[in-house]
Image (cartoon, rainbow, N blue to C red; front, side, top):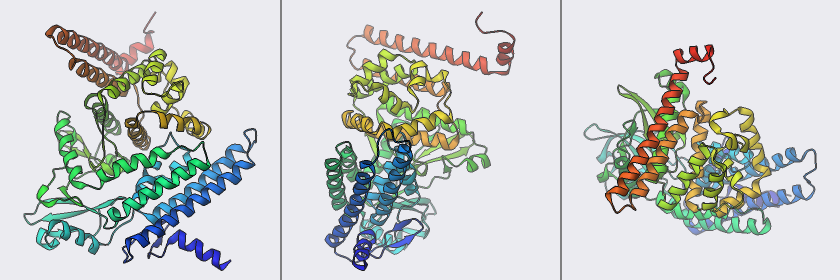
Length: 520
């Protein structure tokens, strides 16, 4: 018995000086050889995966669809497994925290037990000691910290899976935010990715219905980009130039002379988290305005420019009230998705079909995105609405809490079909789905939801994006004139509809609407 407990403790906590805090375990620096630590981390992850696999095998061996307690028993095994995996992610830190946060963002693609359990990792990321961060800064920038900054706050503004951010003052008094990578993240990342890849493939072999290997593939592709802070700075400047026409969008300035692959020095931006309703109330910021501006920004990114910031969780999106209005401040530019023109066109046409409840269009463009005959489920995954709402017009059926609960409850029921879709659709779509779910999570926190105005803004961006695409194929001025004319006519019709909605919702419109039906 004692031997078994010893083995369990070794794999669960490792001999790396971890410290238990609350329900998570935060890593601290140690002096072990990297390969030895890699073995411990692999063992800990393998042990957690083994326990989860055995639990599912035993539970489902005696569980049948007609069991009246089917949903309750399935929910319990999901919750037990999610808690074990979260504990392992906290113990291993780094890449495992990152993947756990990703899982916590897939609200309408995974059972809610996993999503709710992993969500807390956004606030439970490991924190490095200040002295260890100083070493990273001095190694990369070639200067002592006190030679660069007059003051460097010991308490981080935020700690993420790969880095943490501190407020500091330059010698000339400029306030900056300094993002410093956790010292051991890069050295552990290769082993962690190989571990994750091996375990996901092993679990897929044991459970043929579990096909989430794309998760390790995407992480393996994106992680090197996120670990290079110079790449993040370039993304920030590119996005700042690309979206400069959106006067409400604020991007931090990059101080290149004080930046490296592991250190990024940026302009310090005041503001509150995008899901902080108390901050918005205190600063007289409209939650509906914030939600609409965020929707407008991401519609511009996805449908028009095809360059999408893929990590808009609340810690990366701030709001700030200025004399000119409310600004959206976008942070953490490590991960962007560049959409191909073909994908962007098909995705735009699919969303226009979804907005107008064009069932043939939904089927056609969902097929173009390779989801086959499961276009109905795919439409529900994209919109987080029921098929009844999608097929009859989402703008005609306000979203209800009951509908949301039903959708989340059905995720586990259609998990196999969802995994089939996720493995068939273009890889560009995977981060878009994650982005959609994160944005919906923000809407849920603000208690706002996509409405007629949201769909109008989205439709405008779809029309503009499609027009820009077709203009690239034009060879004559008559072709360009025809496309421009069609674009302006479609935008004009949408503006007329927008004006109609404003008239109906205005006090005078509501008065006449009560007196007399709109159509006789």
